[in-house]
Image (tube, rainbow, N blue to C red; front, side, top):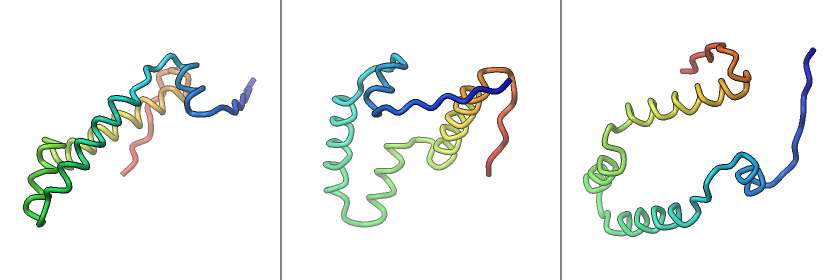
Length: 89
């Protein structure tokens, strides 16, 4: 038997329902710090150096982070039944 349930709620309601912490203040601080750092960037070399500080592993680290999120989402969607997620390139 397959049952589909649709829930219509705001992102705030979903966050509370799932028991996730409210990181709005931390996100605001991070965005402000990043915006301030970007204001001092005058050329491509400075931008590249800033990006290395923000994401130390660069593109490889971002891809790894993306794969972690995708596999977690796939497990959540499958109900954690052990199905391996499809690799997306």
